[in-house]
Image (cartoon, rainbow, N blue to C red):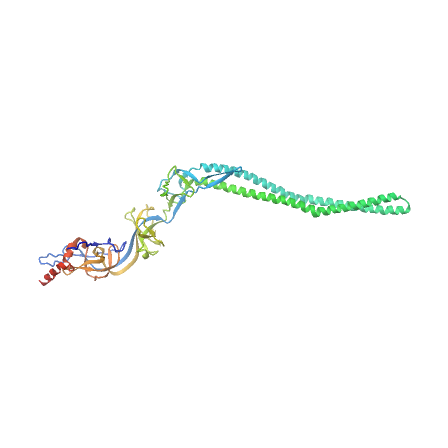
Length: 488
């Protein structure tokens, strides 16, 4: 009888076996019926299916659950911004939020440029109207500054090329006239002195000529001084004053240029905000709504959305891949470039080939337990019609190939008290034997120790549990009966 508390488990679901298995090399093993060994032709082995222990090539694969995703997944957010505008010195601000007027249904396939969502743009349209008025005034002020600068520069040219030249000529002429007048007065004084010596003129006339000569000399000195002062002081002062006017006009001009530039930039920004109220697809893909579980914000008509709020995900359907969750115990066996096979639950009967692109450096934790997994990206060689993000997938990664190794079907392996065992059929008895297995595939186990090539093992021994315990030599209750049968 089976001991109380003893449990038997067979196949791949047992604890301690490799966590996941993948597609193996198909090996068909012959199933044999045992001979009758009791008198009368009735054998306790009758009805037990067996398989031959033989050599085979095992393609060791790792099977993992996962999902289909896109390697290019664009996040689309609300691009509206809060802006400040100024009208006649009165500042105001607005924007940064809007109401959804219409939105494309979730899960819709779209082309580049298709409208995803329309937001209320009325506030931005009004701000844009006011800003255009501001730009018009800035254009007027900019033009006035241009004219003022032009006039200031013309004043400098006028002084240098006109007023200065004319003034210098005038002063030079005054000096020349003074020199001529002084020379004439000096000649008359000389003549008067000769005439006075001859007695032709009175002394009073000589005094008059001396006065006129001194007056002409003083006038000449004044003319020369005026000419010198004009050149040394007046000309630089006037030039600096005029150049200061040019500098001031240039500063005002630069201020108006910057102001106009800033106002135009604000106008262009408001124009973009008006355009941003019509959200379009940046590329082909599938629209997926973003849902904020914490705030419970849904994307639907009438919802108020704000600056930088996530609204949609847009996976690129032309760049699909499989994302597998590989258990941490076997993640070290997965390397980039390994071939993989992907089966999608939503596309029954289709087998997609690919290869491992990358495996995450850090694990992720399941929210329901402490089991850790590594996200593994698998690139697909072909993209069938109907493949969509979020589909459930089973990923099989070929991690190793074992050539010419002893193998048994997975149905022949059982576990007892943490030991790997199987029932070996030979002669007219069944032996319960502890063995050691190595790598595993979906249908076969590699036998490392305990079995020899050509031996026979019982398949699905769990269904014959009682009979096998009865005829197994390991059972001490029936061992004497076996000895007695041998003696007869």
